[in-house]
Length: 439
Ligand code: TYD
Ligand code: MG
Image 1 (cartoon, helix red, strand yellow):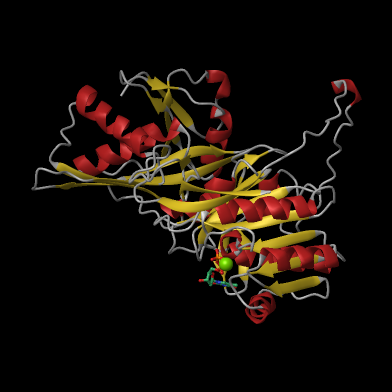
Image 2: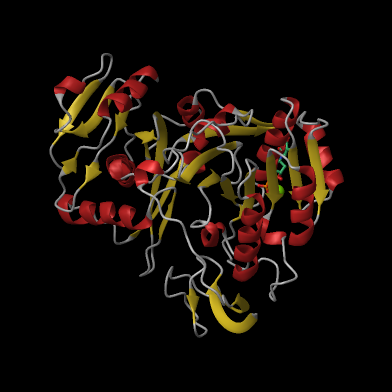
């Protein structure tokens, strides 16, 4: 039996509410709540579930399958786990289809079967891309459809090692009475696809577009359902893109790989620090280098700030690549503890390469970049910084100092501005770490 019900759901985060709201009560986004009709199956009978002692549960032996793209494998924690569900999110044009075409080609080349179901492009367009990046192969199966039922049929008849659905937002099911891309469709289709591969070793990879406008349901509404969420980030203009696991039931999160998009698809960047710092102007004010830790790797990132006079009563604050509130906290500390007067200035903050920094260790580099721009004095070219800034202006140490220092030394930096709590035992030859107590 099915029951119809009208609900309101946010396309940005998937939160539901019984009435329409201008602003989502959960994620705070404006104008993303849409009316949807939900068809609920009513369970009539309870079924038994067998319960066993935890000692008797079979331990899962994870035998990972390589994707053929080492940078992707690393982010996944060593490859694809058979039977798992992976979601790849990113803005349109970032390279999701390119990456997955390459994966399908490599799996086919290794003798496997990859099924690429595209609702966005025709099989011909998929072939064109595959030919361009050298990913053609007999085991690379393509289907162009936007129907969930057709996808499931194709999956059952070809029994592939991997199914790629590009994108989940273009799919719709006849049994769900709302538009493709709505929260109910996206969730319903993903759940049905998952059910279709359940119990088999087939890996299901879903592509999810992230849109700023929130007109289609974003990957956030699927995060709870999938095993792994991989995000593709970049600044939209440059060739560099970073791939990162935001959730991983089978490995660590935040492991990143850096790729560059070229004529023949994506190539992994062997030395990301060098690539990300390549265009840095060492003598220009407003630039500081942060030694970051992303997953198991240390990475040098350029934090830029532009502090420009503002002649209105509304100074602007624009932040990209860093958490907005975190950046405001650093500006607040600068005002209050150091006497910097930022009230009549616009402040623009950016992390080069479109990398999103999630750790508070970037505070000190941000501080240096803003101070440098305000005072019009360049930060010394051979200086890196890492450390968290507390509300009282103290500089707190962050983890993995040694690896950060080692990466900085490898890239030719001679000095590091760090917290005084960084132990001398963590010293690295070739770089002098100056311990700072407060701002
Ligand atoms: P695409 O993978 O289609 O992005 P998404 O699926 O995330 O929307 O590719 C994005 C861009 O990359 C597109 O503008 C074309 C460009 N591109 C290259 O520069 N080189 C290539 O070899 C390919 C296949 C695409
Ligand atoms: Mg695409």
